[in-house]
Image (cartoon, rainbow, N blue to C red; front, side, top):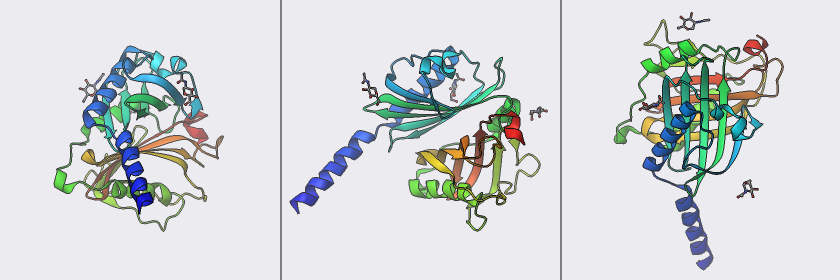
Length: 269
Ligand SMILES: *[C@@H]1O[C@H](CO)[C@@H](O)[C@H](O)[C@H]1NC(C)=O
Ligand SMILES: *[C@@H]1O[C@H](CO)[C@@H](O)[C@H](O)[C@H]1NC(C)=O
Ligand SMILES: *[C@@H]1O[C@H](CO)[C@@H](O)[C@H](O)[C@H]1NC(C)=O
């Protein structure tokens, strides 16, 4: 009995120290976007001792994309108060070198400890920053009224089933109607905006999508899954840096943004 109370208290403490406020996280994503615009890798006021991964490779943050000042045309973030973590999508179509950047940030005691970015540019999967910017700006990712919000596990399960379905066509994916996918700069919803154009047929090979890392924001029904995507890159069949940024409404997928990095132009396809 005493033992179980101690366990319960320990769980509470662990939970309390992982969680943080939405306001704190919103300040952090705003500071991150400003730092990227300024090319300020010191991430003023956020950083303590950062482990940094860029396109799945360990890198010194001073040598990464954050050391370049980038003209940012649009940005959208998720704030995960349960994990004290964030996700940000940066659209930089008018920058001298156009980029689309997906970044996750993890905090411990309100200090940034883990920074991971997937940085896509010309030659990456279906890359077209002009198209990406155009379509993301058309989408509505407004807060979902509190009574209609999905639970974290519902949001995560929707995204997981989408990824699982790529190599197992029997997996049921809760696609919404409408549903649209922004794959690089290509928009499936361009010609049929009222329908579900997200459906992905089973790939011709069996594979397992590993190293899934989740950021979940119930307020906007948002989910991002960083993952190692096998098969697509002919030079890296074991898995290439990829992320899927998903909006779920009423348990159903509404939008998917995919950013995938290639070792050779368009992953050799
Ligand atoms: C920084 O983090 C690494 C890995 O988490 C750890 O090994 C190291 O001791 C830390 N350094 C400082 C100065 O806290
Ligand atoms: C990022 O997005 C926010 C919210 O839409 C906006 O207020 C801010 O100006 C944007 N930042 C940059 C650098 O574009
Ligand atoms: C990129 O997208 C824009 C806007 O949709 C389109 O006008 C342009 O032709 C595309 N560029 C390429 C190289 O496909």
